[in-house]
Image 1 (tube, rainbow, N blue to C red):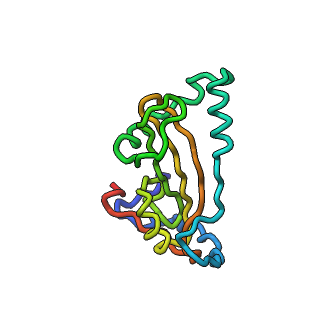
Image 2: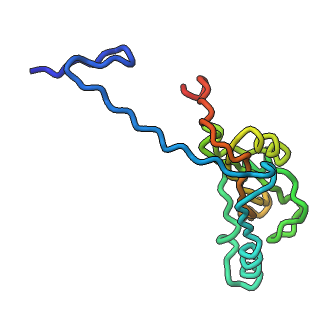
Image 3: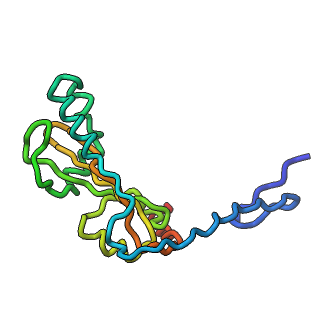
Amino acid sequence: MAAPRKSAIRGTIPRGERPRSRPRPAAEQEPEDVDNPERPRRVVDHGLQRQAAIRRLFRGGALDSDLCDADPYLLKAARFHGEAAEQSCPACRDDGLVTLTYVYGEELGPYSGRIRKADELSSMARRFGAFSVYVVEVCQRCNWNFLLRTYVLGDGVPRRALPTPRDLLE
């Protein structure tokens, strides 16, 4: 006997087949009590690891290729979206050190993993319940890169993820 033909119309179920069950939505998260949504919480500062890496680099315990190996996409993002850092590069002492601020979170939907300017974070903190922020420093001259800190922003009220725009679906 031949297999039933699949329908060319989306959303229809061929005869003789049972509908697939949809995954159940995840349990709703409890709202988090947040006094100031713009104030970072759950902060992890990687400053001590950075100092240790710099010491290893200059004392010969690490090769340049171990610490100065930025991904080409990270270097391209630094060139076009980086914000000037307050200090010079710890590896080559060049003034071209920039910081990148990445945001991640389920509520951001398709916009998770994107780079944002530091001044955009305060408005995002009031629009979303919780999202993670990763601050990375990058030197375009010597390819130094290091994760400086991570933290969470948001007003603590869980929301649905943003819908995916039609142009991203194609």
